[in-house]
Length: 266
Ligand code: ADP
Image (cartoon, rainbow, N blue to C red; front, side):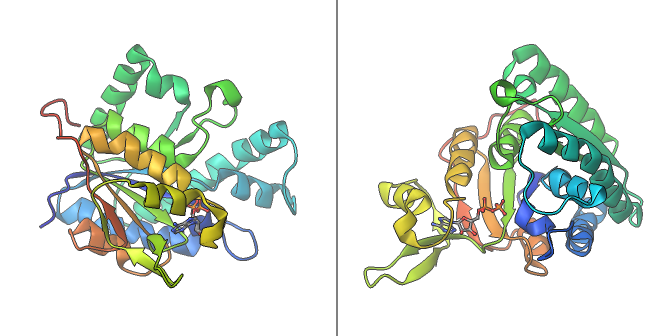
């Protein structure tokens, strides 16, 4: 039995988008079913942070290719958000689990009074066995009030609800470093973010893509002092999420430096 009772699961855009640039309903449904078992049988509490609203909206509106302006993206997100929620609703409905839409901006995760309000809402939802599905409130979030990416948003949510574990589901099965002979290898456990790790996350010479790990390390840095473990895993690998939820070692595990605060847990 896993020691993790309260878990935040971030589902990245790559996990929710098909090759054709559409919402990947099949993968969303599979992930929901891997969570449902743990929610129903093992009494775990799960909060999802989801990407995919813009892609879903663009698909609904028949817009192909990249959206250019910010208002265009915000409009697509507004259309997509409800359609995306409908898919979560359908996926969890099969297991008799209701979902709740929670839209946040930086204000709610940094302003003390708003934090308290949000905390109480999460607490009540989880007590009612509802699955909160969180996203940034793109309709109103302009630059100044944006968290900016769902890796950090998820970390703020995990910290807010005093979660035990944050799982970042991505298109890669963990954090990679390069050996002396330049061969990439997956790091299984991290106890400290070293310079080597920082460089591998941000440096194009790692040849591992866009530097999408920078925001994931920032998420680790938000979670670590609060005693929250972070796991990076592949959102397309069947059964990976279920294994993490029962406490198996999958992907890359970042062990926290801080101790978990007692009390006030949702
Ligand atoms: P998502 O939104 O699904 O989390 P991102 O593109 O933000 O996806 O992050 C994942 C990407 O980060 C990987 O596909 C990879 O190209 C890139 N990346 C950069 N550095 C590393 C690294 N050191 N280890 C693993 N992946 C890395």
